[in-house]
Image (cartoon, rainbow, N blue to C red; front, top):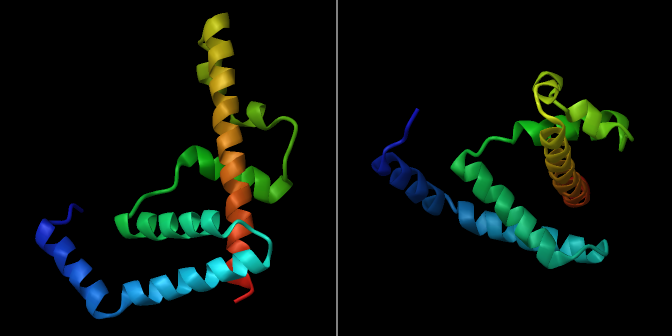
Length: 131
């Protein structure tokens, strides 16, 4: 469903009229203060929270790869065979030796970025739990 410019403008106007942004700013400020109290970097927490609001408003969907990583980390924690679990076996078997090396390296880099994101989310999501 593609939204028209007119409907997007109407949604934005409703957010302003209903005080969405004031509430959002108050919430972010409060959570940033709590992040500081918990010893977290409040600027980083602020960026994380603002990006989360922007993603929600724009309707961004979660990355499938990240969701797989998140599932593994949530259910089992950090495992030694994470790259193997995330490897597309059929695709991997179709590659040459050099391509397999590049694929594994690329997968490893993506996993490390997803792991870092997961750790940040865990740290900053704790701000919601202790409200």
